Length: 362
Image (cartoon, rainbow, N blue to C red; front, side):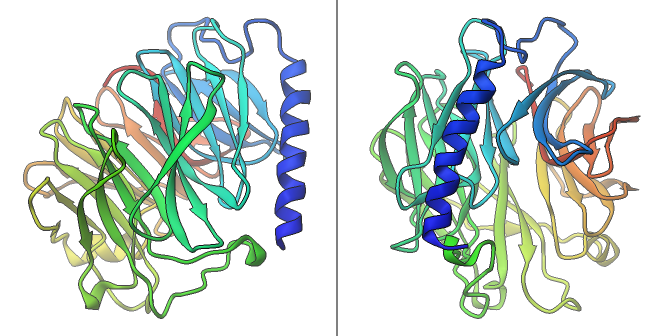
């Protein structure tokens, strides 16, 4: 893929998004007309087309909406009832939908010399949308800021203070973004190729949402420089949990999950060796069940889902889930999806993508 291809893709997404929206009624197919729709996830259909779906607590699909290209992560604002699906790296679109049917869908495209990393979140009041982006000319991570009160126009940006940002989350008071900078250099000229595996720079940063200033940066020790910090979530106590994907030798058994709070150093959870081995050096998603004090992990490479006690880090449950993909807080425990269509105990003829968002306050 070259830069011209990326620009062509951006134009295609604009056109595809416009055509997609023209097929919807005034309320949009994504409106939650049934109150039992509590999850949403991106998927690929058997014909190779892409979409997002809302699902019940039991994993049954309520509604589907087509997307112009593959999506990855999603975010939801309980204040404005808006959900957003972000394109998979190096995709250039994000689609925002009103789950209560009060507004038309909006498709935005990344700025020139930028692409999305597949994740983002809303501000505490739902008025702003933050997206992890790649300034690939300068090889630096950026947060794009979009105004939800003005058609999600791009109104600013600030650095992530690292490279290859992937996931991020907002602290409960809305003042700080916790960002997982995976440390992997990529460029759309080379598709999804990882360009610096011999000198990665993974880190976790805390950034002020009002000023874009760096509050804290936590780099990984030299022996863990190939441990890409990928996904984050926040516990009921404000502790930030992070999950990693190792880019080193297959036989290594590095720590894959940890946590920290502001002003503290990183703490890695000492999982049993058998659990670390089962995760196959790859945690694809992490979620916190704040009500029950649990941490959920999935690994599609290890075909496993793991539940930890958030206070002690002890393994509460380890279960085999073939092609385990997304994880989100449920009642009780976690909702888990798979690439082969399993969601909870219900199977649908789709391939779920790697993340799930819960469409209520958890």
